[in-house]
Image (cartoon, rainbow, N blue to C red; front, side, top):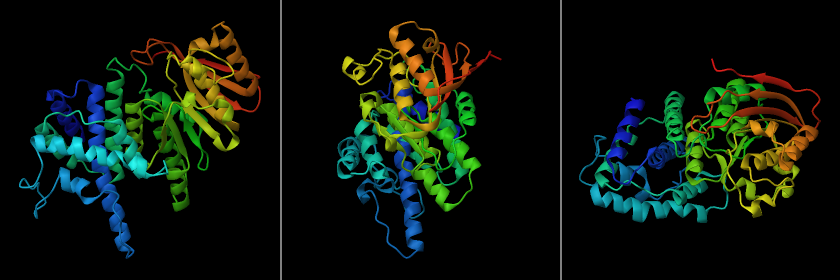
Length: 398
């Protein structure tokens, strides 16, 4: 059912003149799915409040709730065609009323770690690209049929969402920027072994694959009690992402994995002053695959002690600085970090080997990142002691 629903939505988007690529497909699917999810979340919270005799205050005003604008139902639970918006009326409502209303949540909410703030950020970054109100009506009806209730449903939805992200990454325009193969991420998480009570961070979060896999690992290996679940929800996973669409995709992916209000900030990680990072800002675990080869502006490079045009090498400095003493990290990076002879590369290797124990290097086969055209290694290191011995493994394609 889920897979067919996603395919049907993609088929409608393909026919619409406003959605041009896989990037558009997943962006448009994401905002609709998010509002569908939010509707279920509000219903659940209302039921819980009413069971304890309290009144629930809805996040959204009634006019902007799913059951009002998207899927008003008659007494039999079917779409009420007498009042349901469609065609030009539906597109005008979404473009001129719904999106501006939701975007204002960012201005009206001080705490970036709330669902309200996430609503504001998502709808400040995205816009509706579906031009036909009849197409939008069809997509909304498909989304309404998706169940978000059980963990099994969410697991299947998250799996399909990951597949869409992979397809988008392989579509060519964004190479490996959003998608790291999940078996590789799982292997990195298993080596690092994040524990409940530790803070896990990805400063180039993309589709949040590392945080989602770390969540699955920690959830499977912890005692399932109220305190641990609250820690996992609110105080464990942190990320930063520069790109608009990746930010939204990452939030949606984490929500589907069970994190209600993901702690992902929409910022350029490298623009934040590295020298201002203090102990309170540091993390126990860092898992990441920073972008390959991008060029940061000169003023951003001035932020770092080792100045280089290679974005991934700037991220490495940020990660080392952001680890707590004794903190553990696994980072996918271009293999040129091991061999380049320019001053910046030599200085970065020296900094890594002297400030961290680089205990393991995993040499990845060519083609690990479809379309990226680079050879990569995974660096496993612990901060706080210098490197004495390095285990070097070469993974051959099977």
